[in-house]
View 1 (cartoon, rainbow, N blue to C red):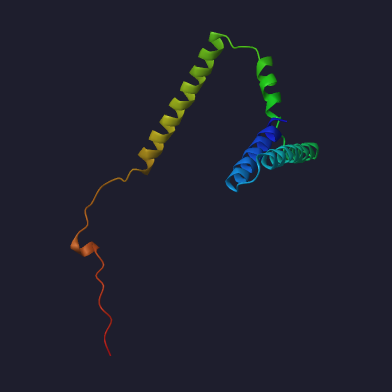
View 2: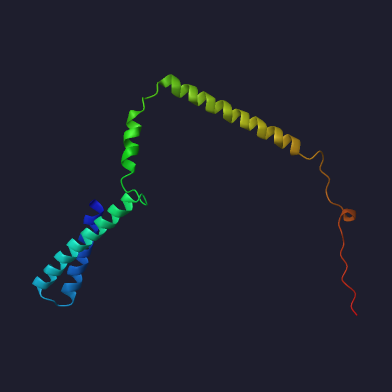
Length: 127
């Protein structure tokens, strides 16, 4: 309902602005804006109603999420501390695994490139 009212007001304002800029009579502008307000409001309401009935778009589906959040019981400080400790332990294990992988992938020795290690390319012979 709110969306249809917003679109209806916007269309009525656009009709009023275009009517006043074209030097039409004030009664004509007001009558056209009233008709535009009613038609746009009804059309947007009808389209949203049909879309919600066919489950294509759900504009009011987020209202159920708010209710489900209120049903959950609040956690005690001990539960929060237990969750934090579990996360800290998991993070420590990941760091240990990463350090072990880095040590395994570490090269055994470093040797700088010398002239004998480089491949020299020759230009193709010209015919």
